Length: 171
Image (cartoon, helix red, strand yellow):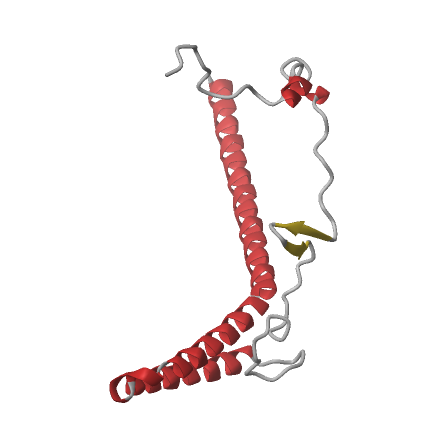
């Protein structure tokens, strides 16, 4: 057993000295590195900074809904949901009658769920825009209400001032 003293934590990294004057001069710190653009490797896989939803074919999954830019998301999601319900019932029947043959049904359910997930993910940009519009509209409404409240209070204050002046003038 060692009798020497040892620090419970390792010493700070050497770049901490770059921030020594930060308390007196916050601009003395080095600027952050520029953001990564394009593709970059991480843990053995290559990722990209572009916000592009990969297609199902790129992921090695068969697409169950029609391809193209004009997809009726509601209709396709309802159709996939009906298929999912049917396949779950079929899985229950298979598990009762032939338990050893359940794997194909589970794969079919997984395929349907992946297609539904992909359709929902393709709606995320629309959802983000709608959420942003809603937030901005509510901010505008709150600001209009605040302006109206300020105007009302100003009118009340002016009325009180006029009454006070009249009371002082009458004395």
